[in-house]
Structures are given as structure tokens and as C-alpha cells.
Length: 431
Ligand code: GLA
Image 1 (cartoon, helix red, strand yellow):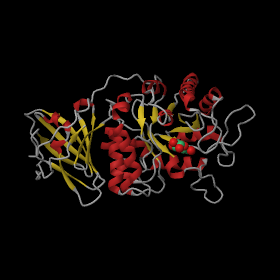
Image 2: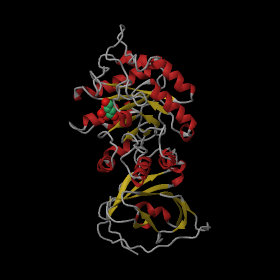
Image 3: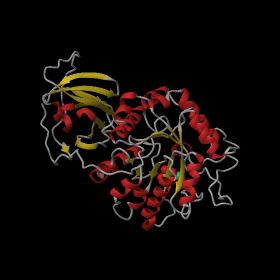
Image 4: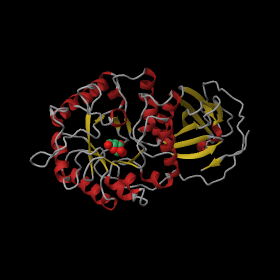
């Protein structure tokens, strides 16, 4: 049995209750689809009608979401990102959709999305213009909030480009109040902390009171290096950001890029597992009209979605680094725990990780029941504190498990797969 060296004190997983934006929304991390990472600012509907930012794109995505089981799996919000509006406001100063790409207008699109049992998200910016150069909301917060409500919008992603950073807080708070005054249920997705970090540590108490979720870090790209950098940033700042997450308000590590081009299947599993552990909004940015069955199965995996949507609503932490493994743990309802083991060694083959080395393993005293969810569903059965069972983790892949405390008299019906635990003791850091 290998000896684990405790180097740093264990992060306290229980945080004080944080008070969130009191609009009754996002009690669980938001699930849906958002166009940005996959479709970006493609406005060329003449040569690329299937992929340009147009009402057709969202209608088609909504149709597929109903037909292909996405809605049933919990993906509910169909979200427009940047580049939807006309460059000019109308005579009353209201935003208007680009007339060529959205001939029916946003209200009609919202009606269509609602008729499919889904919800519509839209995008705006707290400053003078959006990141892609479309009209911003500065000076128009009331008008724009009312316009979105009149159209039947259900979520607003509010970006932070073209705004003096000292005025970000005022802007985000004013828009939050304006949305509330409309009386419509509109999830408020902010990028406030992302734009403040370069200047100072954001006030997460204020952010949680203002927004339903908030971006902290750079835009996700369709690459493993991008996913790694987001995961690393989150771990490096976990003591600051994790306590602010809870029902009604969530840290947003940006979109799921599963089903695109840049991630291997193991890396897609890592993104899905870690986003669930991080209690992140699950907003896919991919082409649901053309997605491979494996990626679809991963995104619709009910056990992973259950971890993401766990009613306790606590975000997980990175709890240990061991020989190029990272252990992430999220406390779940009913005293259960989700454990993700990420293999960061990008050379060689699958490596063994003895699960008793996860700090949260202490809930296996006297016994626990372990279920492996990724890479394959497998009941690992009843284990104890002294269990020598190990899981195999592929390079840049993740093994995801749930651990349920069990009583001693409870007998396992599953045969155990005992494996040699050959991990070296050195380099073990319990965070
Ligand atoms: C910023 C945001 C992205 C996206 C683009 C749109 O970069 O962080 O998520 O909304 O703007 O221009």
C-alpha cells in the first residue's frame, strides 16, 4: 500500500452560504446551446446559409434538440451570441435584429423556440459596443432590458467589451435591476469578473448578488490546451471563486466544445467530467445537426448530468495532485461525493490510480459504494478505507466516479477488480 504524503492542508469543502441574485432562476447550472465557439461572427448567409448567424440556425438547432433527445436530457436554452443585431438602433432607440438574417425578428423566433418547449437566450454588452462591434447597451440599459422582455427572451449574456473597467460594476448592477423590473424571468449571464481581473480581484459577493452566472477567464477554444488552461485557472483561484457558487449563481468556465474538431474523445470526456465537477453551466457550442454518436452519448450521459445538476449545488475543488494526476472532488447531496481523476501525462498509455489516494476517500470509513461513470459505467462495489482498487486513466482522459457512504452490514454483489497499486509515493500534494 503506498503512503501518501500530506503536503498542504485539505481545502475545506464546506463553505458559508452565499447569497445569490434573488430572481429564483438558475437554481441548477443552466443547460443549453450557445452559438459562439462553433459559429462565431459568421454573417455571410449568401455563401454559407447553413452556418451563418441567422434565425434559421437557432430554429434548426431547436428542432434537433427536440428530435434527438437533447431537451429530454435537460438542454433547454437556445442562445444567440454576438453579431445578431443591426448596426443601427431603430427610431425609438431600440435594438433590432439584422433584417436580412432575422426576417421574422426576435419575438417570432422566441415564439418558435417556446413552441418547441425550449427557451431563448440573447446577447448584449455593458459598454458602448459588443466585442464584435455591434451596438452596446451603455445608456440604454432600461430600454434594452424592456425590449428583451417584450420579445420573450429568457436569458441574457451580457459581455464587457468597450467599457471603462471602473464602471463595470455599476453597469452590470444597473442592468440586473432593469431586467428584474421587467417582471420577466430572464437568466442573467455576466462577464463582469473576466474584465475586472486584469485590474484587481473582483468582488464575488457583489457579483453573486447581481448575476446568475459569470465568466472569470478567457474564451474557450476548440483545443485541449484551452481546456487545460481553464481548468488550471479555476484550480489556481478556487479558494476565491468556489465559495461564491451555489443555487442561483455559478462560475462559468465557458462553453462545452464537445462534438467539434479539436478534442480527442478522452479529452471530451475530461471536459464533460470537469464541467460537471465545477458545477458549470453546460452550454454546448457545436453543430447538433451533425455530431458523432459518441460525443452525443457523452453530452447526454444521464449520470454525468445528474452530478452537474446535483441539488446540493456545491462546486467541486481540485483536492490533490499526484504524479501528473489531478484529483477533483465535488460534494453531492445525500453525503455522496463525485471524484474525477485526470491524467495529465501526455505520453505513454493508461496509468493506474489507486482510488484510496483521493482525499475524499475518507468517506469510505467504514465502507462506501463506488460507481465508475467514465470512461465506462462500472459498479466497483463496496470498498473500505484500505481498498487497493485502482482505476485506469488514459492520457488526457478522466475517470469519473461517485462514492456513496455505506453501512458495514451492506454486502456487495459485485465482484471486485483488485489491481496492483504501483503509484509512487513522491510528488503527492493534497491541496
Ligand atoms: C467575448 C466573449 C465571448 C463571445 C465574444 C463575442 O470574447 O467572451 O464569449 O461572446 O465576445 O464577440
